[in-house]
Length: 422
Image (cartoon, rainbow, N blue to C red; front, top):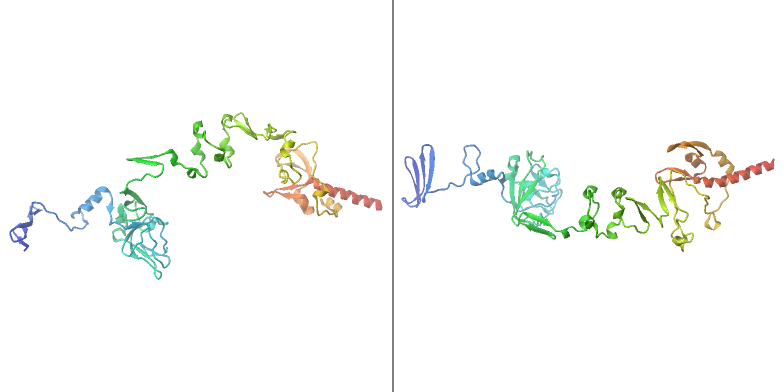
């Protein structure tokens, strides 16, 4: 039977009254512990509070490592947990009745610990206990664990994740500083994984070195826009030798091609290289740009190019619009006027009154203030003959001066009739 005996300066513990189990000796303000074999351990201590308190090994280890280890959690989150924003302090409560969704593939039960690290509002991140798992008649409720429900306990906190499809056997540490609980954004960073790095397709891992092979970069990875600064400098010919037409579909902005040398462009149909720029040509350089003017040669469009096209053919079924702030000069301008092209033909009524309501003016275009012009104001004409005024996509108005001619013709006829009656 175990016994103990107190002497003047020692306390002796024995198993049978004589065989020593351990001995506590006091001498010169020093306590010495001795076991049966000469050594002894003191266990069951809590973490120290005061400077002179004894410390456990785990407490000392955590201070040496700069982190404070918390009890392991069952799993961690991989996304935001829906919560009632009016939840009590240090809790995450469901916004409606229902079970807590599985976290990283793990269905949690009441009493289990979980690392919450992916909240949209990251001040709610932390280590929680599942207080209520939730069901059809109750909300789920998570409560910050006792070992991490204060700012000091979260500072430098580290925790090990036991289960999960993605984060099983990983270690996480609190990397936020100067924490004010439920106010400061809290960030958990992964610092360990017992399985190490696993090489994926096109990637090799050799010790601390991770290499990406050429075939690891797929077309899908290059989809979308590539920023201009990623293409700065010279790209060797060998790197683009295999480019096909299908790789260059879509629109390439002009500023991307501004300094492309002619030697880098193969001239094909409709493209002519000029110096280190490019000039568009429809056929045999029949279209060119000179002194900021567009020139189309007389033979720019030949019969072969519009073969088999009638008036309503594919090549001519849409309007051709030329928009310019300059002048267009030709020997003759004609407009399609065949009766077979028209319908809803009606006489022009009150032509003289409408012509008299039109107001001719002289003016200068702001873009060319030196040149005096004569015409009408589109907004004024629209009040008289709205069919003669057109609006473009930007809201600018233009006038069909040719279509004013029928009003002039009928006005002259009305005047003649008036003179004849006199």
